[in-house]
Structures are given as C-alpha cells and as structure tokens.
Length: 406
Ligand SMILES: *[C@@H]1O[C@H](CO)[C@@H](O)[C@H](O)[C@H]1NC(C)=O
Ligand SMILES: *[C@@H]1O[C@H](CO)[C@@H](O)[C@H](O)[C@H]1NC(C)=O
Ligand SMILES: *[C@@H]1O[C@H](CO)[C@@H](O)[C@H](O)[C@H]1NC(C)=O
Ligand SMILES: *[C@@H]1O[C@H](CO)[C@@H](O)[C@H](O)[C@H]1NC(C)=O
Image 1 (spheres, rainbow, N blue to C red):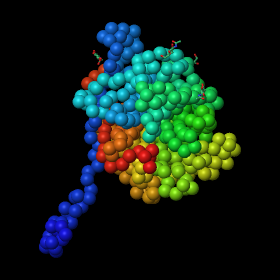
Image 2: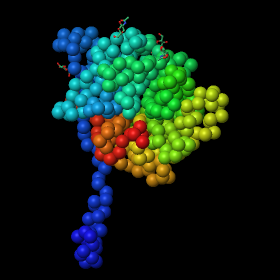
Image 3: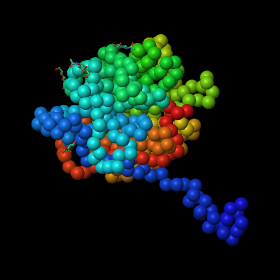
C-alpha cells in the first residue's frame, strides 16, 4: 500500500496528478556530440598541411551521413558529395570527453580511405549496419558524381578483427548503376546465411536491392511505391528548398516475429513522400519471385506520415522511429497499432535540422544524427567554415535495442 492509497479520498486529486507525472517522463533528446566542421586525427602535421595545400581537405565540404554504434564506438559514414573530403568511414570513441568538434578517426585506416580509384579500398560510403557478431555491412555506393570510377560495392568488415574484409561484392550495373547509382540505407536479416535489404536512391533507377551474403549475389525490386510522390515534392529545410522527386531512401525491419511462420516485414519510404510501405522479407529473399513480378500485389501501404523523412529505425519492441524533415523532429509509431497512433517524440527548430540516420546501443539508448545534408547536395548553396553547429548526434533513452536484438 502506498502513501496515496492510505490517505484515500482526501488527497485524491493530489495523488492523481503525482501518478500521471510519474507515468510520462519527458521524451527529450540530449546532445551527445556536435560539430561546426569535421576534422580528423591526421598521421602527421605534414600530412595535414599537404592535404590543405592540395585541396584534398576542404573542411567545410565534409559531411556525415550514416551512424552506427558498436562496442563503445560510434562509427560514422562520410559520403563524398563535394571535393576535399579525405575520409569516407571513421569513428569516435563514445566516451570521448570532448563533445564539440571531436576529431574523427579514419576506419579501418587512412590507406583504406584515401585512395581515389583504388577499388579495393573504400570510395564513397553513405551508411552501414553492424550485426550482432560485429560484422559491419558497408554500402560503398554513392555513385551520383564523378569522385570515383569504381563500381558500387557492399563490403563486410569484421570489427572484432581490425576491420578485416570478410567479403566484398561489386554490384552489377543492371542492379545499381555504376554512374548514377546510390546505395543509401540498409537493414540486415540473419536468416538463411544473411541478407541485406538496401535502398537504391538513384533518380534514374530507384529500387530495393537484396544482397545474399551466402550466395554473394544481388537482385533488385522495382515498384511504383519506391518513387517520390508529387504532393510531397516541394518542401524547405532551414531555408533550402527541395523541389525534385527523391525516391526510396529510409528502410527498416520488424523485430523477429514470435511464431516462426509469421511474416517479418520490411518497411520503406521515398524521401519525397508521406507514405510508408511494407513488404515481406520472405518475398525479398526470393530471387525467382523478384524476377516474376507477381510480388507487386504484396506491397502494402501502411500509413501516411506527417512529414517527409530520410532515415527510419526500428527497436526490438516494434517501435518505428522516423525523422520529420519539414517539421524538424522525430516521430514514432508502434507497428502493432494503427498508424493514426503515430506521434511526435521530440521537435526543435534549432537542433533537428535534417534528422538523417539512427542507431541503438546495447544500453537502451537511441541516437540520431542531424546533418542539414540538403545543403551539401544543393549545387548553389555556399558552404562556409564557421562556428555554427552543422552536425549533431543526439541521444534518447528508450530502454530498447535495435530490431537485430529480437
Ligand atoms: C584539424 O586537426 C589538426 C590536428 O589533428 C589541427 O592541427 C588543425 O588545425 C585542425 N584543422 C581544422 C580546420 O580544424
Ligand atoms: C590499393 O590499396 C591496397 C590497400 O591499401 C594496396 O594494398 C594496393 O597496393 C593499392 N593498389 C594500388 C594500385 O595502389
Ligand atoms: C561524369 O563523367 C561523365 C563522362 O566523363 C559525364 O558524362 C557526366 O556528365 C559526369 N557526371 C557528373 C555528375 O559530373
Ligand atoms: C563475391 O563476389 C565478388 C564479385 O562481386 C568477387 O570478387 C568475390 O571474390 C566474391 N566473394 C566470395 C567470398 O565469393
């Protein structure tokens, strides 16, 4: 029996207020890291000065996109959108004491990051996923500019063995355009030897690419649901307008179903779009079904979000988190409930400038990267080196882990 029960009706209204206050802790993201510009742990002072002199490092042109936590490190993908970007994959120690402008450490090494057109090294990475075994599945597939001539590839690195490459798959031109393709985001499914479900954000040939680790093969699903929607085409984020139809981008996956024969759904959305779609992972894993085209009737429209989104994320309780680009916030929907129960978790005009990539750690925290990436893609936007904060990694305690831990 608690204090309120003992005092009975006299204190009813007081006690009710107390209880509801306890029930609803405020969901607010806290600042974990922030940057006004990106800089690295250079091998030497000379190396730094040469990189600046030769325009191999132009600080204001560097941007971060994908984030994934593993073993006390936050790994960060740095897509090469502009010139002067020396590193495309790096990390920061999560316990770094400095929270502002912490230097990024190239991963697995400088050599694997700084060799343009050496196709056995990383060329242009947008994002990655890290499975339960510490294998990082890397999308080296930003091929929308001429910063590399290497084919797009999917690289599996063992984080528990200094980033040793376990497997590398060059995606054929019919699956991802070698000039114009854009491997954007992925989820990893551990069934049948391991699969990655990947969005190809290419304007010319958007779709969902499936990669089988066991078969070392890829195939592609193309559907109208993967194109942008006209009514969502025009929006503005931080004064930079967007008016082109940007296709499929965010992707995530339901936790493991309780019954084995139940479908495990993969969710996706076009960037210029409000709709979220779902398709069974069993269908995606079947290359023969993909070729047949009969799968299209299985695509399900599950709901309409309040805003356009970039990244999506799912925890092991079925909570789907999505960025709200034009509303400067993050939304959340539990996939077991109707979509109209979706709600805003947190918003801030100042900090949620283009919520992009999400990551969970193993201690019940959700991280989000906000990066104003639309400015880097806008050819007329003039980037400037200044003390204004451009990138933030924010943290929210959810008490859950990612869909991988289900
Ligand atoms: C980058 O970091 C190096 C130290 O690694 C430092 O000497 C240099 O001034 C920094 N440059 C910028 C632009 O922050
Ligand atoms: C490409 O990079 C790898 C890894 O650093 C290196 O072993 C190899 O010699 C490089 N190839 C060329 C042609 O430079
Ligand atoms: C890349 O180079 C090719 C051939 O040189 C050219 O046709 C194409 O327009 C270039 N693309 C970009 C984005 O610069
Ligand atoms: C996987 O396929 C690539 C070609 O994309 C090939 O170079 C590589 O050797 C294959 N890896 C394995 C482990 O079979």
